[in-house]
Image 1 (cartoon, rainbow, N blue to C red):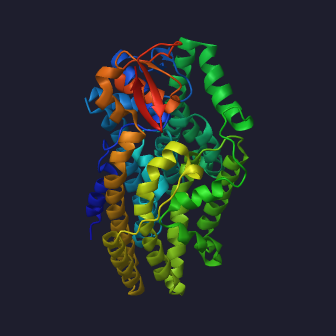
Image 2 (tube, rainbow, N blue to C red):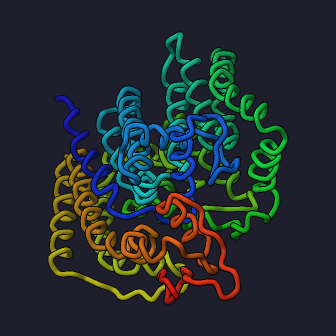
Length: 469
């Protein structure tokens, strides 16, 4: 039976309310501003922020956002829709190769785990560089490992080149173990990668000189890995809890990684070693951010899917793990209430009020029971799809509950829409970078810092932007 209908729930999951909240964090409004400026200026070589060259990242995300602006999409849709569509395209490719090399049952489990995991979902919604890099790198690895046609080496190299254009040289490090076993494809991969990635680097260097290379390579690549200059310093253990949270609600499935049966297949042993290699590489960096782990998640999803299939053949633990994973979604009402404070003040300073809305609790209990029964009855694919429907229901609830508050308290969009007239001639007074970049985006101009006694001024009071006269 055709599985093409599966795209419908994926579209709902990924495109639902893309513009429901304005740009958040420091990076989203900044990257969106660069993409918009690229579209308006017609210069698709030099990234610029407020007219000045900005060389922290290569241009793929900016090109995607600029394309959205050329298509006259609304602000958030212009920046986020290309990322969401790229994520969907990768999930379809992921399904195709896993189904061909393993089984349709394994493919459904792997795509469900990846597509509905908190980490992949969150970065598929955000206009950030992590998802484009992860999708391009993942596609390059799939084609290198599982496609033997003559063009496959060049195609894999071209995709790897796009991964480099998404996030510089990190994908080359992650791809290195795959390159070593590529054998006859190595030359084609190298040619394809250079043909795609090299022209922009050469052109940008010729136009901007050493200012480009010093910032792009030495500060953003070398210094970010080896020094604490970027101020994202965490302990060596940081990525272990991040990985478990990123898997939510499938976190409990990680227990299957300790089962020897998971690694009977030599391909799974190699994949396990590659995941450890990637985790060790990111853990060795002096600067650590949660999104860095995203390129490991497709491989982890495949490993967990294979582990689930092994358990279905040997024991009856899988139904309980799947049902318990689905039941974890009952924390979403609590998360919806805590999310604005957590994003505003940090998780450590957030007071969490546990909420167990009875209707939501009953809905999740029904989903969990259905997942258990379907898995116990020998219908693992239907069990996974029931779990995916539970996530879709939960995401719709979370967005409906949290987005209005996030737009009001975390994004500059809500403030700007309400106070546009009063804030038009204002200066900013120590509002923080996230607010500053957001204000600059929505006002379509940079705000200047306040001089002593200058009014009106935009300030932060009790975690919210306000205008003082």
